[in-house]
Length: 340
Image 1: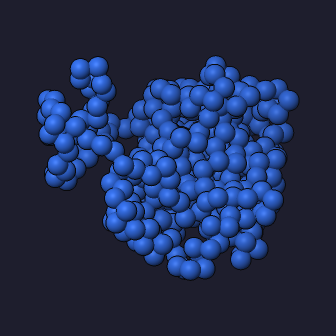
Image 2 (image 1 turned 180 degrees about the vertical axis):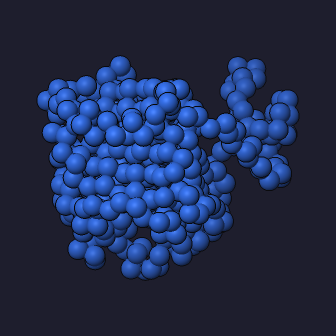
């Protein structure tokens, strides 16, 4: 922890008293604190944390991310919690795209089911308006929190957060509701919003993590308390049958998945059928790249946005073009691969 930007947080006792009283008999089944000071420079903090992209890294004792699309860093050692608190210090440094951008914390089951509490910046054509949101993805559908009853609302709609100013974000999840709170570093409550979880279908448990997209953001001083765990095992993924041919000139054991093996002094990529496999993939293919600091926008993104009008249309064209060129592996950041 760097004491120059992370002062003590006197608001804890002041605002937690009522929450602790409400929880009553519950005691923490899992507690965790993280200031990222124990990792080497450039580390992704694994295996403690699980990243969804390669752009999460430790710098100067804090976790940074600058993904152009939304990505998450999940506490891999965390159990699924039904009653929990999660807080972290979030500092947005600069923007990386011209479209929607978010930075915050998340209670996460999978990419189709989660809550996030985030600082948000609207696209430039919407005057880059700043606000905060406590938003839900449910069964792959975004902004489904609107179907729930809002029980508290203070300052979220036009929350004037600022670049390079740290904020303390906190999620409180109970059996009855979910609450998002934003504080300054002196402990003053700046904004809050809450939804009842008793009135409809909702994400009511999850693991904890950080989330970012479109910003360069610094995260620090994560604190987790899980008072009630949820017994949950993610469903095993179902993969389509492998129909690739590979190269039978080199044979190995058919294991049903790709793996590497050294054969007669040469390392090979082996396909699920036990045949050698040559990988022809892309480094990346992304609708939002590349940000030009001098221009203040991403020229490629602006061009394809004008040409195709949406990421979905661009993705279909890009995916089919990659297939025609003979690319068959979506290495790296290849967003439209599912359109092929």
